[in-house]
Length: 496
Image (tube, rainbow, N blue to C red; front, side):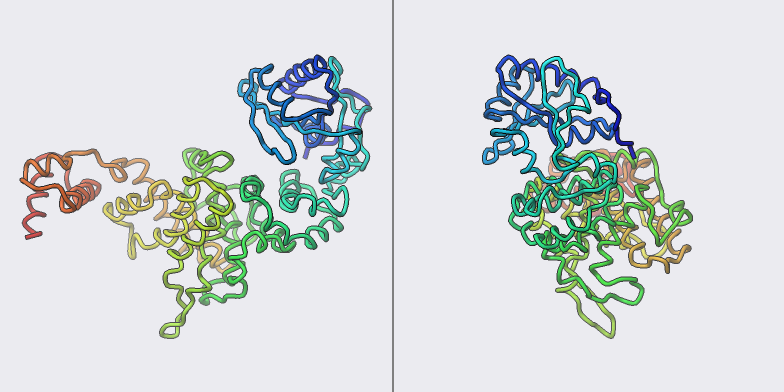
């Protein structure tokens, strides 16, 4: 962890941020607008952390200042909040964004309205003056809390003033590897129900930032301890205490949280207390997979962070589908119903269409990898159908399935069975990455060819023939145009 800078010297500021601050200070001085650097930027300077986010509080109309600053700095203006006026200036060339807020009167009044002591510090921004540690305004002793690695509320009403801070406090502690002090935790538990009134997009932003961090699994348990997890997702309440078949180590609720932790383990992000290096060494891994899980899905989300969300929700419909048949516990249809439930939750939190579709696919098909083969390796046809149906989610599903298996068995994991599961995963990945025709065979005949050659009218029959042809290609049964025409001719004779 970065050490806290506590000497009487100029604060370390990354060069790009320094250039931007110099330009902003000149711009504000020319307009005679008093301003302070505030919040996380001051905290990160004290910790020696580089950051691309600068927070400026101005004694003026923040939206007007931000829009004018965007023009002056050749940046882009973004309205963040018109109720509590907040404007952002994005500077793509510098890869920096500057958020402007307003304060009236004394800066101390502004700091009193902030959330946590480590973010309730400020430094007056003056043209040509490098921020100095001696000039930090720190009315709530945030520097002491930085030294003690503590997240502490500025006052007892911070969560009632803005309930998104409930989630932000946990995310901030996770991000900095800090501890939330006992009194602040009690305040979170007291006010946890207020999270339901927060705009979905604000929850989404904090949730994604939390899920992007290594150790998100244990943090979900922490959210549950504070009463926040089920306040965020009431749909999870019914899964608590729902027993599963004997091969499962936990009930549905704890299994869901442990699946997130197990997923982080196999993605090489965090250790997991129920499995170690021997189990991890069987899991296929490569730089190509790292890039796959790091891929951006939408603004703020990656394949990895959304996969963790799918892991949390994959069994969300088990409670309402539980039934005992022939003495066995079954959850028939839980994947399909769970996908619908997950879609509704994500829509409520204002996720993008692409994000929702991906996680919905992950929940819907989370059992599919184990259904590709009952004995031995899956056929090329089975692999083709798998990627045809799962699309972008195909690779992610393989790892969700592995995590699901780990979180079912936990310390009772059968290493021989696990090795075979991982071997099948690697085989399917090899077919996907190396034998590219498996996932996307080249087109030999199209619909127009089939209609022309075999004198067919447009309709579902042509689509079915094309799909059968693609599947045969994926299985390596057809590679030439002549073979394709013979294959279609045989199919047509079978359809009569």
